[in-house]
Length: 437
Image 1: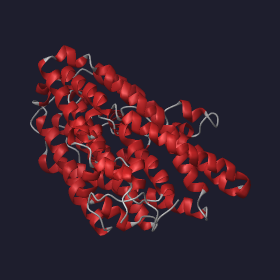
Image 2: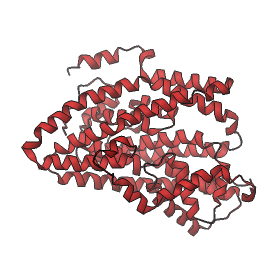
Image 3: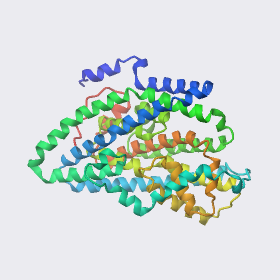
Image 4: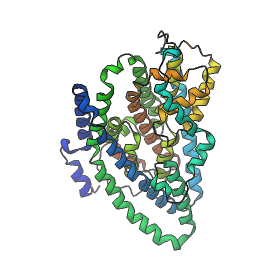
């Protein structure tokens, strides 16, 4: 098999020039600085914030170009709705399963039992800001928020769903006009090259962003803030790990690939998500790598952005686990019926969190506000360690969307499995050609 010179050059890079090693080193440096010099560590926050802004700057054009060129290149537009329907069926199934897993773990291990907290003694002002944001998460507000004010307004905002909507409509329109739209399609396909090159340039700043974000987290909150709530944090991390390795692992095995190899393939992106505590930071790179692994461009363009809003496995595990932790800590005994009601509310509110900054904690506030048995003020108990759980939420969401992309591609027969497994095995292979958009 002929190997492109570019791929060979990449394989010869020394370990210290590879992104994953640089991100690991940056995370370790950030932890050390934040621990030993908290003031300096907290002052590194602008580096993390700046990198996230750089990533958000390129998310909209990456999604738009990927979706439009993918859809416009389809021979049958009916496949768009079919892919979207299969993706949503997958998201609904596994998001619900994640909520159930969180509820089971909370009932079995009961991390909040024995704390005997009086909600009246908690600082309700600490969580009031999050509660105030829940008014933006009603179903009506959510639906209206998907529709942009103008055709170009999504590109100056940060709502992924608006970009997705405009891209799908424009892609379908471009496909319907036929030959007359070919020059536009050619231009957009040509524009894809420099845009993804821009992604690669921005990703070179990932170690700086990871360093700044991790130094701030440790410097601001300190490692000691984990001690009091270590059982909750440990339960969440272990549950998320088992969800990835067991549940998603079985799904991956059934579909003919290994979730462990997939995680190894995406190790640089996973470490970046860990360092920045944001799965959005790796979205452009995930889309690029899924295409290189043999998944069809149009499927990647639909599944990944939609999954970032609707396939939040880590967030869902966190929601039921944290809600029941608060109930246990405040000595609120919830019946099975009340817990099921909590789960149903969480299922709906998690979908309304799409595009909301700090979605995990805000969604929890929205859920508890609808379930009066569990005091919203109890969120103050986990406010201090929420940042540490945020990393795990983001990583689980990220891996869940990577698995979903391959699975939906497999269902659509839109993935070259030889290409996929060769890439996951670390073999140098040419750009995917067997499955074109």
